[in-house]
Length: 260
Image 1: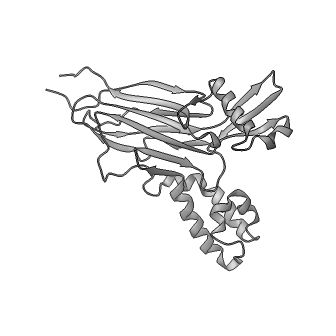
Image 2: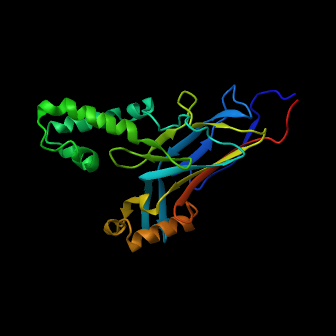
Image 3: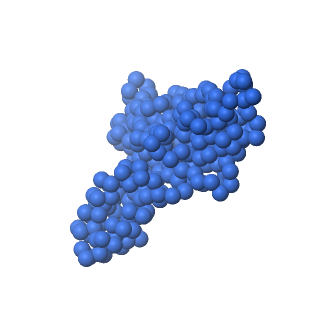
């Protein structure tokens, strides 16, 4: 007779450059079994330094948008169940409280600073709003922020971005005190789930470029930017995919031993 407890092993964790991005499955919670489990995945972003030709060229790589894709084997995500990013997360509000307050403060001075931080969000509010409309602007901006940091997409895929623009930094998912990524169910006793963290080439950005005159040339879709991404691949910081650039991978699976 099988004991209904989780018997998982995590393997094949690989971050091309953990300083830039990482993804890692967490140990399943108590109560998870081979047949029904909550998937918890820690996703973090940061930055890494890239140099070439004996520091003749140097820059810092950052990420502006990334995607997490799951490959499920002998298991599935039950239709209609909630996934991380389906609703407002408390961590979203905490993570952006300071940024939102700064943006709201700027509404009293004509939105100048906030427009610079994120034109798309604030354009809908209108730069001509008066001081009397600051509360309304705060409510709308709060809604935009809380719904866009992590989004659950179709195809067992999630999107990570900063609502007001800017670089991904810190933890975007993970932690036993937070909601799980999703629930999975399996008919048999053995299954595996692979996670792949990726970004489009245009979302790999170079900052703090040296010499500074090269900075303007490293814009998205430019030949210099393509060479930059190729250099990052050659250095093993990221991995080339068919369309997207691979940042990190992780795998969780049940062990083949069934305990009686």
